[in-house]
Image 1 (spheres, helix red, strand yellow):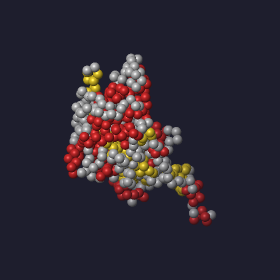
Image 2 (tube, helix red, strand yellow):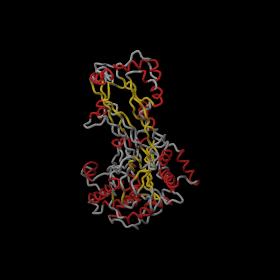
Image 3 (tube, rainbow, N blue to C red):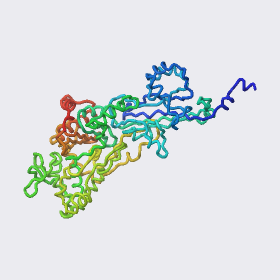
Image 4 (tube, rainbow, N blue to C red):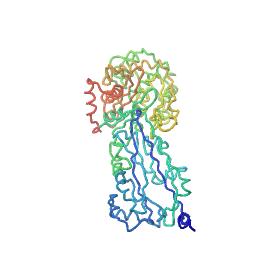
Length: 590
């Protein structure tokens, strides 16, 4: 009897009628750049939970509302539910107010004891120390019904999930593991005691921090260069396949779509309805004709298949001519006497001729075999398929197959190399993403192989290695010796050819311009390159929509990125180029 008088533990436990589980949310993994500089952090916020049966209706409601910045009308609506709805119970906690900032909650917390029935649950929004990288970093959102109901789903309604970018790609690593606290409650929903003294409680496990391959300074600089322009930049470290920067323009401030932004819904609607499509990640989703950049591939295949002599001369009377008539035009340039000069001057006549030699290797009336062989090489380069980047929504691009010509375009006609000659200069049915173009530049820089492009460099608080596929060398089936004339031609294109705006006095840049036809407006400006020529440190592809010749905008932007990355500054003699790129506004073009 004395034990019952002095200690009511047993009576309390006897009054318990239910066991409730409280979810403990883990902190989401942080995201860093390659130098350990923070890109995404956790911004603590709170959900205020309420159990209806425990509310003291004589409490100071005015003070409660003032502390939280809400109206009495909101209070009444939020606390009183349709109790006939099985989603709600007077004795089970539900969310009264979500996304309370840490500052506001700190002021409220001092008085929380005055408001029985209410308790706080810590959550995490995302915070951004820099206003860059929105496309590549991504954002989080609340899970939808399908994600909750999926078999084996770790989510419940109200949980957050990576919706795009790295947040989505590494959701399994970043989200962590939820913990739980079990309590005994009485019939009014009041806590009696921990269940089994907390023996079954589990702590939340924080998500893994990820070290990305991104270079914060290069990313920020590239985004400045691409302001008021449509297009994309992808820069890769050739020796590893690590992506140094991935930029899509126009972009947006990542803070606009953070969970804690009360204007988030409106921001999303504005972004989604913007005619310039700022939510579209042009680096991996947009598919463009590669234009003259593709001539490097034609040259490599022609040399490997031994249908072309490196020192062969092709005359160019203003374009590719047949029967005294020019079928494919070209710009004015000296006669190309070898592959090197053909790359330097980007001669259409030269590469249409070479492409036809490849397709007609087994005879003019047997293009199927030659064209099929040509496509085999394209597959090895990673065209017409995803390069496998650790990033959602990557598109495949396209190159036409034999079946496409047989059954779709020409429907049984005896097509030949003349009909499909535009493929030799990167036009026709060819489509590539900017990540594929950058990977091609890295492949040429490596003289015949690439590592699948990727954004993960390491996991900070985990022993797990990065996926093995990203350290596997992918060979394209072209002998290393055949890359020399192509690379020499790319170097001359920058020194004294179509890409002179990419010239950097003390950095040997090897590049190739492209101008892709655009039936809806001005042509697209394209450029890819790598540098330095020997022991390349960076390969880059720049695509600027509606910007004209490749040497006008894409080439100088790429060269500025290279100079900034390798030297950390732009030489005074080239700052006028930098200012011209920074000041250019191309978004008002159709």
